[in-house]
Image 1 (cartoon, helix red, strand yellow):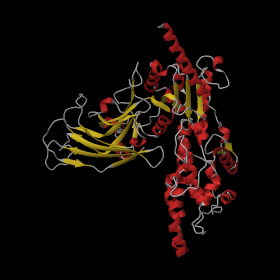
Image 2 (cartoon, one colour; image 1 turned 60 degrees about the vertical axis):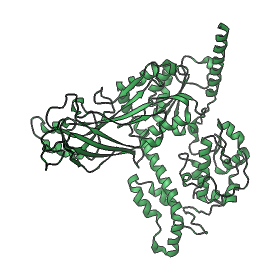
Image 3 (cartoon, one colour; image 1 turned 90 degrees about the vertical axis):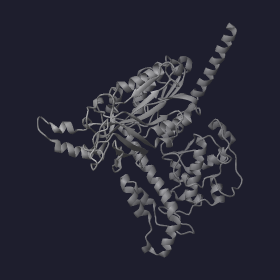
Image 4 (tube, one colour; image 1 turned 90 degrees about the horizontal axis):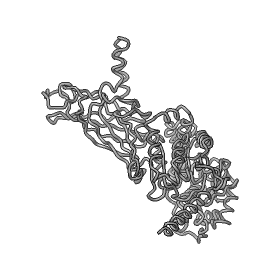
Length: 601
């Protein structure tokens, strides 16, 4: 029996060593690749598109120029082809036959030449007009600015012009696209239509040409504008997290930080010898917890160059930074943390990692009202591409809850008595403004006047990105907790908050709940307040009702509010739109509905 255990232990150690060797094979491309051209199939970089395509033909059996010539691809066809191939390679699939592989190395060994392609090509879908890889320099090298490259590709497009087909050139767009992106996002749509529409005053022939070419030009231009707008928002977003003030606030939030600490340090069966991916690492505190918990390797990812640098220094100062130049037997303690400056979606462009190679994915991704900043999509991408099947995601559940709040949840009480003076006229104006904009603030538990309702729950281990957009219908009745006084109670709006769970699905030893509820210790997320256009009178029990009075007034208070709230990702990247519909019902069945309120966060 002892010999069997010894052999089993020996086998496990060999497996661990093999796993560590696989992780040690990572190679970082570094930041010096900016502006250079990444091979379509492997991690090689080139200074020109001609050298890149020569490499692809010689090493990967992909003759770009032959395919372009044989199919007569125009500029847009080339863009589609490149984005199609990048998307397939990211999935370790052969672009021509679709066969899947477990690694990029296996894929590159398989690549083969193709015969003349007949019929419909796989990249005809306009989805491939959108750059698959952000800031793909290869796409820029194929643009109107590269006359030589255009000649080689037989794309009849000259500098600043778009092909209209039949050898005729449409209105120049090159310079106008750069002009478009200089304005604000809100200005783009109107300016875009002005710049890209060819006026009828230029003749019937030009108008006919516009009809033939406008659709494809608009799609490419919109994709370019949208990509630049997204990049601008991302730059501002990651830049905002370069401020140490916000990190001081988050680290000082004991509810938040203690929850992650307990989940990571108090569950040894999950973290011991685990490989961990920390998405949006900031100062690296979660990575430090993971390393302290016994993780064998931790990769910390952050889109802010400054914070990636800070996290690297913090890990180094605490003796936890991984050094690929130091042999395993020479490492001291838990030197397991590697910090990568990138977005989660582009991690494979920075380092090579085993596909679905992480045991644990941890991230503090939550924003105001849970979904503000839309970082959840990055976490889901990392889950699908980098987490092992059945791997742990922390937290693994999230729930949005809501309730009605009373006058104390507004600023009215403050303005009603300012050093003994009545300034309620200001309070009414402020409250009116609040009915158009969400307010992030702490609502005291005694100001909650209705029972709590669950709006939506997310299973982060299985949910799809599309499930981030949802609509919830629910009812609110006055609370039975005793905080509501007898008689009429006025409900001034709905307040939302969220809970996230580190459940016993993954945290076997110690499940943890992180709550931002008004009934719990306040956090830096506070709550998100949506104020009604006018307060609604409510009662617990049936009361004498004036038959002609409007429901929700003092003469005809409501016994129940039915609300319908939709939360969707806004057109502006990283923002969300919230719509609130409210209907009040009286005890005798009469009802009254208010106009839909639209909020943007």
